[in-house]
Each structure stands twice: as structure tokens, then as C-alpha cells.
Length: 305
Image 1: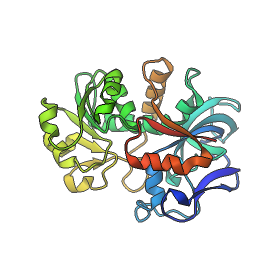
Image 2: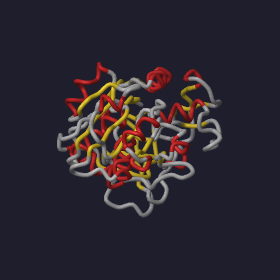
Image 3: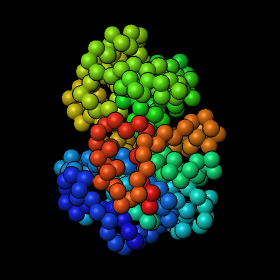
Image 4: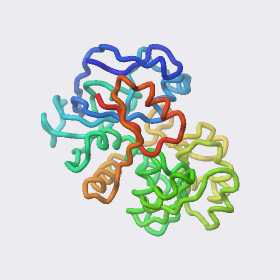
């Protein structure tokens, strides 16, 4: 099968399409014929070598954490899904990849809502699980005032909407061009950058850092306690007493399977949108990674296979 891989760490230009053996569904897994698959910041972190000392990987390596497609293999011990079903989900994250390919094995999945396009479905699962996991860690419920740093990105847009659906008040940081967009998602927008405390101008109960832009000292000051801050993007989090949440590698948090279902149910009922920053054919994956690396993609970047 065709798959997106890299054989050496480096810039987006190291990405290439290769013929690789097809994977097969093991116990508790399903295999899908992939229609669309997401690109996350973790993908370019892995490709660039940023994680190589933390999570060593054998090379060449196939990228991609989430995908949507049609089930064509059901592994032992799996029930409630059959060949031909349309699903979206996440690969076995111990592999740190495998979804940017013609066939992908999913370890966590839910039915694809019929109202979602393949591109929306292909880019939803990883962001949905991450948003749900981090909001659960922060204890976000009705009445919580939540600040989302980097609210216009892939995880941020889902976290904003999920928090609003749970009854929270959400403040989201973004560039001015994305303020109206965030208002449409239910957040109060403010501009990111130095002086954030003055612009927030209210007490916050919890902070989710999706940006990794070096703002943790100010975010901790805003929250009043580093335990009220969770980051998914700042590798210096520990130095600030902040929990760095991840679902793979050393110190990983348990996956939020129920949270994935919660988000997909909201999307299926039209109460949550799946903003797509851009869609690229897998042959143009280098351009997709370049866009992701800017840190200014509004929503999720998706590859069609």
C-alpha cells in the first residue's frame, strides 16, 4: 500500500510516498480503508526529530494519528462494528503514527456521523480526544471560566466548543483575524501575547495551553496555581509546575475514549463544527507540514488518501 513516511529526521522535504506492507487488525482493533487522515503538530515534532530522545522510533516511519474510512478488517474480540461500516478513530499511539496511509489500524474508534464529510471526520478524532482529555484533567464543567491559549487551532477549536457545550464560560486567545471566528464558536476572544493578564481582566478557574508559545509563566499567574494549567504544546511545562498532557510516550495520560464519543455525538447533532484549515492530497504532505509549522492554521489540516 502507499503510505506517507520519512527515512531520516529533518524538514518537510524528507517526507515521501512509499510502498509498504499492509497492516492488519489485531485483537481489539479494526482496519480501515482510509478516506482522509489528519496532520497534527505532533506529526512534525516526530518528523523533525524533536521527540527522538523521548520516543525513539525505528525508521522509516509512517506518520498520522487519526483517520476516517471504511472498515475492511475486524480483529479478534471486537464487537459492534462490521466490515463496511464508516468510522473515525485513532491508531495505537504507542506507534506514534500509521494513519497517513491507504490502510490504517485503529485502536479507538466511533461511528462516523453521516453529516460529516470525510475530511471533517478524518481530522476530528485526535483533536477530540485531546480536547476531552485535557478538559477532564482541568475539571471543566458548568460554571467554569476557562482560558484557552491558542484557541483557533485544531485542538483549541474543539476544546472551546466542548467546554461551551458543558456549560463553561470560555475565553480564547488568537490573532485579531480570528476573533470573529472564535465568537462564532462561543468564546470571548482576546489577543494573545504579553500583557495577557490585563486583557483577560477576570478571574479564571482553568487554563488550557494549546499554543506552546512560551506564555506559561503568565498563564500560571492568571490561574493562580500551576495545577490549574494544562499544556499540550510546551515541552518546558514541568519546569513551571504545569502538567504536560499527552496520550503517548513516558508519563502519558489515559485516553479519553468517552470524550471522543461525546465530541462526535455533538458533531453528529450539529452542535459542534469541525473547522478545517486546509485539505491536501497526501502527495502534498510537505506543504501540509509547512502550514502546521507556522502555528497559524485555523482548525485542522487534513490529507486525502
